Length: 269
Image (cartoon, rainbow, N blue to C red; front, side, top):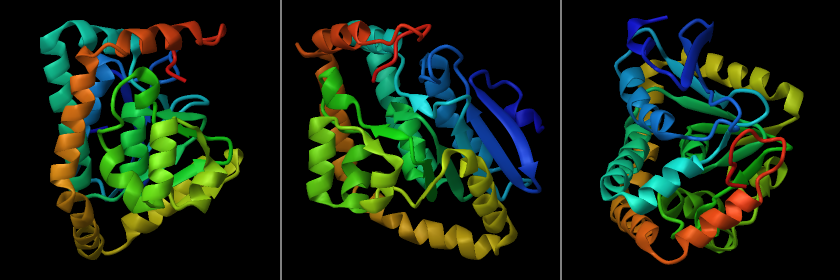
């Protein structure tokens, strides 16, 4: 594995096929929640991949039976109390979206179990998004007590339409893999046992294709997302403004109380 990936802690890397890099989000005991370390790594990894001459396609998945359970609640609590943490994570959230959108290599996501928060950014902004039938896609912002900004404001309306986007983002309702495919939120749905094989099959085809044609097709199509830049920046500001609002502490308390007894740590579901 290239030295450029050697200092990552929460992201694990392997090469399941020639010119294909697989990224596995791995935060044991927390359903791969994005703590401070993983959140920062999810920002910079797309720049490293963009400049890696040995990689033509990427897969992103989660370790075990979860894709990612979203922002780690310890990090969320710190954001609500410390201005410097809040502004750092705000910038990271912005850069995560733009770095992924602007990465020249095609990205395939393989979502299983909960897919929430920062992990879901990569799951839905991937060029080909694949989920198992039992995946639970949730935008958890309003349940926490902040606006559903971030990537959701730009990509959900484009993928599944404004009416569905409003319903799921405002209600914080989970979307199964099967329903996500039906409404156009994801590219493909598979059986759980076939998920990673299907993702690899797609990634191998992309890696074997014309890199120039695929790169510039992605660039052209992602102009729809770039055109929504002002909407994204406004939504992100509204979201992060909410971390200093009255509802976040209640949202944190509610989420901590609802954690499942077999979780080692909090899970924002």
